[in-house]
Amino acid sequence: DTAVSQTPKYLVTQMGNDKSIKCEQNLGHDTMYWYKQDSKKFLKIMFSYNNKELIINETVPNRFSPKSPDKAHLNLHINSLELGDSAVYFCASSPRQGHSYEQYFGPGTRLTVT
Amino acid sequence: ILNVEQSPQSLHVQEGDSTNFTCSFPSSNFYALHWYRWETAKSPEALFVMTLNGDEKKKGRISATLNTKEGYSYLYIKGSQPEDSATYLCALKYGGSQGNLIFGKGTKLSVKP
Image 1 (cartoon, rainbow over the protein chains, first blue to last red):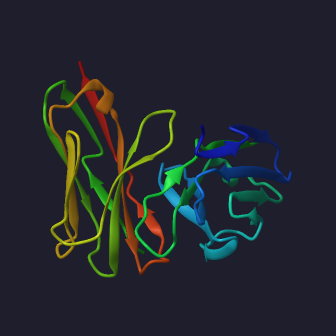
Image 2: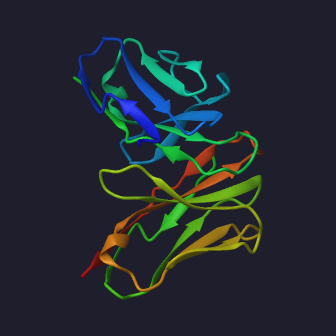
């Protein structure tokens, strides 16, 4: 039973394309996140959603648009992909937003833009 | 810009050695400190969430302490085993319950049998 799943695991695409990464959690959590692991290997928060509502939107280009159709899903759509978007993207979830709950991470999606 | 610093960057120990590493963070606006264990080709897994100054948490051979006034946390591993080999990340939650997690770069631990 995979708690937080992401698809696809690998994504290779060309500059200018539009692509989506899907994330699903079966933990019944209220809060979901998207992180980007940058070239220096830091995990950086991109977005946070609580009960399908956007809570955090860090300084991320508006080519990145998260969509949460329900509490269990937080998908990441990226328009007009650029070379600098190549990275590993991690989805995560936590039980609540309003307390110091640990986060549960998905396996990551390695995006390569050529 | 808030920085979370971890040291050392990497560590090589022999099986059976005990080891520890440090996470340093700005003490203002502290809300919580998370520790995660990240094995190669897997996802980060939570070890501890610590919120109070003087907190000590333990899970098996791994324990952590927290000093929010001086802005540091230590992670200890007693009697390291090869399966402890992983990158250990700390992350600072600041600015309240809706604040972000800011991750350090991690300490990569290798335990030789």
